[in-house]
Amino acid sequence: MAKLGAGGRTEAVALARRSGLLADQPPMSPGHAGNLSFTSVYRVNRTYAPAVAVARRDVLVALGATVAGAAGALGGDRAVAAAHDRVPLPFYGTSVSGIRPDESAPGATHASVVWAGEAGGQRRLALTFDDGPDPQWTPRVLATLARHDVPATFFLRGDHLSQHAQVYAGHEHHEFANHTWDHPDLGRFTYDHVVDQLGRTGDEIASVFGRRPTLFRPPYGHVGGSTLLAAAEARLTTVFWSSQMREDRCAAHPDTIVGDIRGQVRPGHIVLAHDSGSADRAITIDHLDAIIAGLHADGYELVTVSELLAAAPVAARLPA
Ligand SMILES: [Zn+2]
Image 1 (cartoon, rainbow, N blue to C red):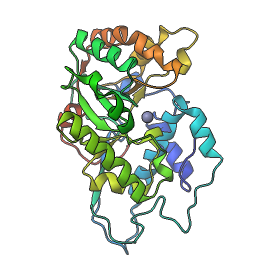
Image 2: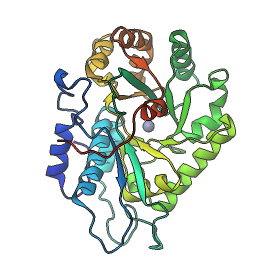
Image 3: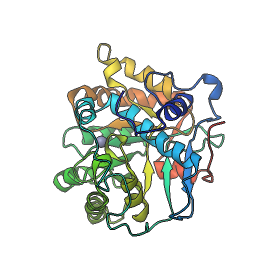
């Protein structure tokens, strides 16, 4: 298990298990198809009042975010996550997971955090690709998307974009979102460092594509309070995911990645993939054509994350 936030762990794990977000649990039973029962979209919509205790449901949601991210880290940069496991967070005397270092009030009253879109009776999915652009893999992804005439959402690293922005020429219709400048574990970062990571990357995306991103995904799915605040102040929706490519499970028989993702997804899901990184992730790139064809055969329409989130009103909800 990758690291979890301190306190309330049992409740958070139980919540994540019910939500199908822990990697060692099956996703959701087929009976839930079309009727997402977990916290698919949640807005922490609470007026800030320093002396008022945080509502229990806010704590649960915050822990749920950490667990969701931890589950993702298991399938991703495990070496990095494992290394961080052995370094205790400096909870006291710092503002790593707190609010502003000068103890001034938050500049936003709430944050928007999503794991999926409301299904709304539609079989829609959003494919997302993290960590690019990569000069070898990203052009292959873009060509495959173009062949199927489907959009995707790319969560970009600012440093990679500053080196390889040309790969997107002719493909500017996709959604481009913020994945920090150089992919640090933001859960260990101060507010000021998070502001810097988000700001520099947003500026780079704006300079390349002429529009600022509205979505942000934290590397490894790790967040602290400082991350959520900095994102909210930058008017960024924090986007986790509800299904993910599991290349590690498919290494012995790479073509099983197609059936694996077709078996995971449900209407409204946000699907995590990578177009940069370790060699094993090439399994997804190699099979992307078959994956998209399979999802189409299952009746899914592929849309960007913003289109998915706009499909139905966002409402606060908790698991039953
Ligand atoms: Zn990443």
